[in-house]
Length: 262
Image (cartoon, rainbow, N blue to C red):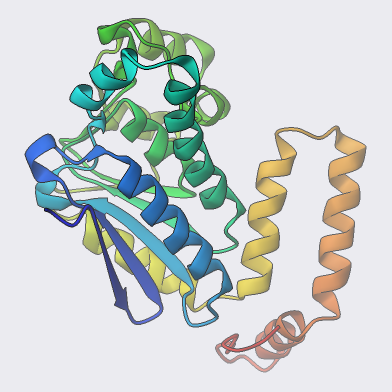
């Protein structure tokens, strides 16, 4: 049996590869559980500073396996729901992880693959790749946070087009809207994502983690609540080792060294 998830440590970066090229890296329960566990472990590992998520053999992820969806369509509601709950547990783990998670998209990201890419903190994509919220093509509705993440990043009319038609949207168009952070030549997404991950992994881990929480809470909180969280965050950071090192390095005109600081 093919190993559905390949994990590699490259310095301070964990590279996770969705590995089922025969199905364009469709998703499975093995992947849901495996990647969730890997993300949760990385969150606690001080030697890991960032995560890169990609797909094997030039394709990011085709979403749910249609044969598996066919089987679940014939099961009872609780069984159908349990599969989605596994997907959502993985997505929640990605958002709870204080380390940056970077998608490296080659080929395409379709269905739950689009949700998976959008759930990452940053997205690097090859210029010839596409994103497709493809559920409607087989009579289904989005999951995996597609409407939540894409809805906060894209104009409503564009998201409506994606959800209603399932059409392939070129990443060039999504780059102009801000969903994609970096565009590369075909075959270059992983290298660019790695360069970005290595840069972030050398940064202040505590500040990055708090910044990620603030980004997520900003979509939900009123201004006063969010300002309170920001005030608490920076007041804590100013008295912490990272803040002290960063300020000292700036004044001393040297590169800060944040490794091992808390």
